[in-house]
Amino acid sequence: MSAADRNLTAAHAEVKAEIARTDTKTALLLAFVGAVLAGTWTVARDLPLTVPAAVVGGLGLALLVGAAGLLLRSVRPNLRGRHGFPLWATLTAEEVSAATGARDLAADIAGLSRLAVAKFTCLRRAVDLTMTGGALLILAALLAAGGVA
Image (cartoon, rainbow, N blue to C red; front, top):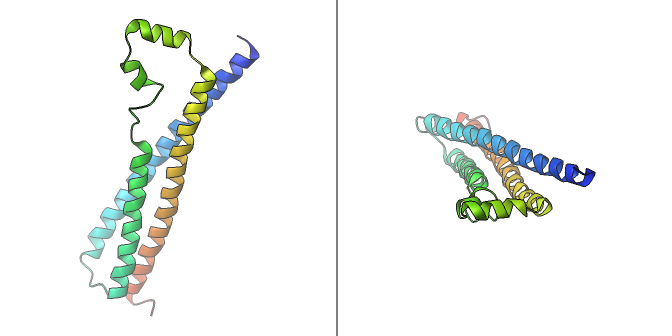
């Protein structure tokens, strides 16, 4: 195996590992957002909320729901993909052998890298929405407790 082949194989493995790390982070954040939404609903339904607290809390919850949507979009399977399982599922055994024999690792790395960047972008936006939504929920709690005039 040449140095160029080893470098391509290493880059391919690195991109696949980055996708796996991003999916793991996404799953953890989705569980966190779900827990915050459930906990907020449980606490808020038993509290007498002022109008400002309800408005700010509602905005915070809306941002958390938006974050959950982005997270779900990030992990949504792409069945129209041009590589990987969806492609293999449409081919015969002979076509799979031919496709893997003529596999262009550089093109695969480029495609997977675009996928990784799209996933990472959704994750980053979801983190931003989660932080903003959490801050608004804290403000709503302060407003409900009468701590902020």
